[in-house]
Image 1 (cartoon, rainbow, N blue to C red):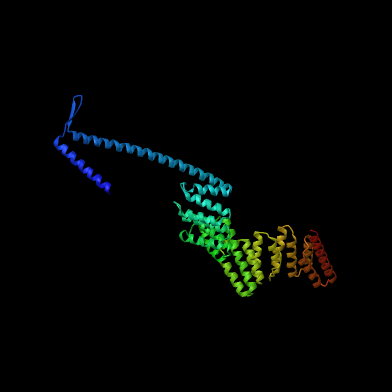
Image 2: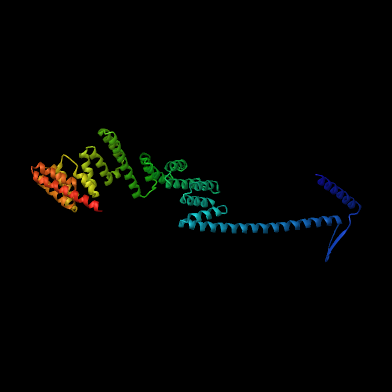
Amino acid sequence: MKKRLILLLLFMLLGALVFQLMRHDSGYVLLAYGSTTVEMSVWTALAFALLLGFAIYLIWRLLQGGRKVTRVIAGGRRHSARAQSQTMAALVDFIEGNWLVARKKLVKSADKSVNPLVNYLAAARCSYELKDFSGALDLLHKAEKSRESSELAVALTQARMQLGSQRYEQCLATLKRIKRSAPEHPVVLDLLANVYWELDDIEALEELLPSLRQLQVRSAEDLRTLEVKVYLRHLQLLEKRHKKQPDREASKAALDEIWARVPAPLQKEPELMAGFAAVLLRLGCDEEAEPMLAKALQKNWQEEWVELYGRTNVSNAKAQLKTATAWSRQHDADAVLLAALGRICVRNQLWGKAKDYFRESLDMCPLADVYLELGQLLEQLGEPEKSAAVYREALHHLANSQRELALQ
């Protein structure tokens, strides 16, 4: 404060002295160049000189500042190019699965990267692959705080890692939070479908199916496979409930309600028709099950479905036999189809044909239940000796099978 006061007093004294000098004598300056002359007082010349010096000083400072800015920009570009090069090298390591090296490079170059979000998200994925889940979470937080941050990208990365580490409840919470702001984002919907399946939340997954179909989140074939799995899982859950609380009427009503929800094109899928028919058979609804099984087998020949068809007891057994006989001409004879034909012939009281079919089936593949059915048929026909021989043959085959298993 004292220094400033002293300087102010000195300037005031200097100003007063100059003012007195200017009043006493203004002086005279003459500038001549060729035939041109310029006259002015000393004080005017001094003022021009000071202004000229100040202008030169300003120009010099501007030039110095420009060179400094150029150096800074050039340096920034070099740093940026170096950071981008480091990021690209880190991403190559990331693609190759060199997680530890990739994470180190990505984090190191993040601050200087044009888009640090990419660095932090990729580094978080590296931590996840290294089973460093807390480190992955820290890097996700850094990604959220980085410039050019994308809340959706961060949340999707987090959801994928949660799904991969089987933290399904946390993953579901993350996806529901994203869905509020991006309700039709295909990746969000696809991840939701996966987590609903893992959590066995079939009701929620079924509600999601129309959105998956409308937005074409998955290919037509993948979506069809998922839809079939959803409705088959409904059947499995229905059967579990029926075993705990056997109520045929309630279970049949629930089954009909599920079938009504199945889209019409999907009702023609052989897997679903066979699945629903199997449940109908277990509920004693053979008349409804038979045509569904027949249609399913026409589209897709499966031995387990043939087995079910042979055990389906319907009133029009002649028509059933006609259908099964036609299949024997269309497909190579196998033990399952021959046994099914034998059972259908028993229901048609064609005893001779039934015995022949059972015997052909046993010759191709000896099975305990077929031995039992043939033995019971022979007993019913009054042939106890032949029935006993069949039972002995079954015991002999069973003993041989157990011996072979023990030697393996």
